[in-house]
Image 1 (tube, rainbow, N blue to C red):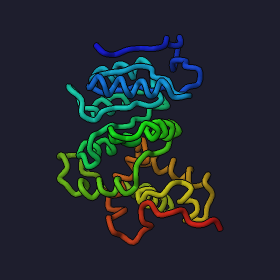
Image 2 (image 1 turned 180 degrees about the vertical axis):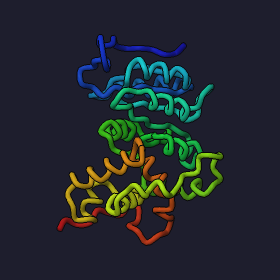
Image 3 (image 1 turned 120 degrees about the horizontal axis):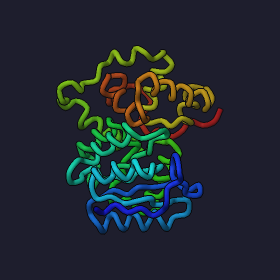
Length: 254
């Protein structure tokens, strides 16, 4: 076993780590795993609670340490990173950990499936250290870490490919949303942040957050990433449609 614990657990609930963002590192390559763990440990406000080399180990260790963020290689021996993530999220106490998937190529079919399953984002393994640390803080704060252009490329590449029987999304799922919630979902899918959506709709940030939380709840989704994929799969957003382009600059303040 390569699982390693670095702190004791509190008697009940989440382990106590002095207010730091806790991170679980999962990668089957020893040097990569050790390098990631060392980088995180050296960063202020971050604490590595363990390391795992397989998906099975990740599931066990996540249950023990309840990390805030999991850095997870998509391709692992045994069960895949996606399967491990699915099991972790299905059994994790609230708040569930945020999962950052690691991959060596951006247009990886597993990345698309990871977003559908509930990943908060993904990073290439050659991501600069400072960007990786920023990414951990971003998802720990509950934000989605997805480059809008890259997300669109993923959707374009994989959304129209045949689905496994029984997994084809039903467009009627969106009927539970109000017209404003559908509009907000469309803007989320086009890559706008809450601040950009607020400017676009001329509403407050609090209002946008309320709409986002409600639509995620109604659709039984765990993340904005899942909302993006569902919006494309259900036809709410189409590549090249007339909606706000992904990654547009935020409109000037009015």
